[in-house]
Image (cartoon, rainbow, N blue to C red; front, side):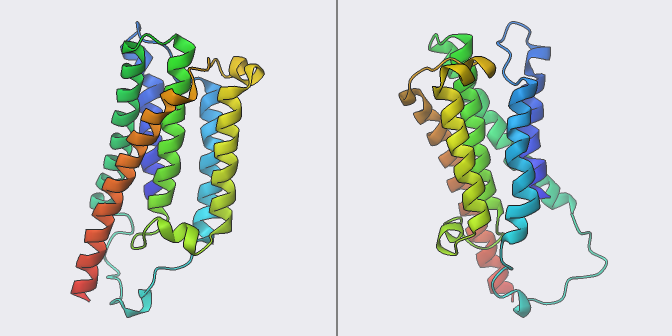
Length: 206
């Protein structure tokens, strides 16, 4: 649930952006949103369900039956994750415009930033206590397959002329996607750091 809230905030924000700033290039079109949902839906229905239970879960005290399943605090943190992604993608979007890229190039760079950030968001949300590295060491095959397919499809739609035309992209050169990786990695490191200290606090309270 946390991931669903987090990822849809930047999607909504980026889709509505041209409605408020009509001079800006249109970023997300229906086909782009369909592409995103083709990643989001399998992740929610298969990948998260394949993830093993948290370590030490049987050592925790019972959950208070009066406590809300999805608290306001948790919703706020999920929304914060989404806003971080939105701000990062917008930053790269405006930077690309400032650098003089064409509309198709700007769209390709910003969309790639959103996909990469989405992948990192999935990795950090798979577990509330374990590092995203555990996804690789514990071999959650479903997650790895979905993410590898997503990366492959992204490379194809930004590289192949036919798919570029369908998605209204223009290829700006691979070097321009470094900012996408850097921005998404910064969010991943921040969220993983917060997770580490929250997990440490929980363990100290047990």
